View: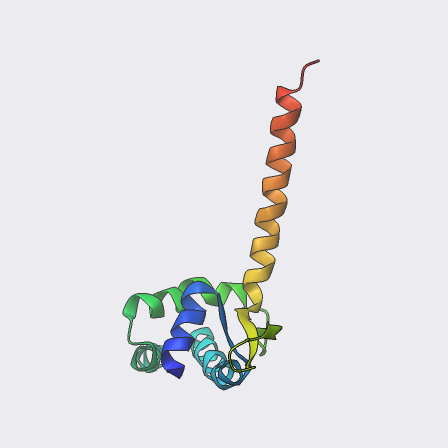
Length: 124
């Protein structure tokens, strides 16, 4: 289960889960990203044994590492978002740190494009 959750975090950059599961998968995700920062054949093979998907390993080593290249550790963030009604389990969002900065830049550029478009369409 932990391997699948780690794969989901790396693939989707954000997952919704319980607090206990998130705390269990964070060390695995951090270890995978640490291996990807070293980028050797040995660490790629170790990542394949955990993730079971060569395309996801390629994505980890080429797309995820540039997002967190300036960080030494702490590649994930846990955000608490409430309690599940059925059993009272605490729900959280587990996300990669670098992805938040990228989404903020894209939103800013979208707003700028929208404002520029409105200015061009406005009657003079």
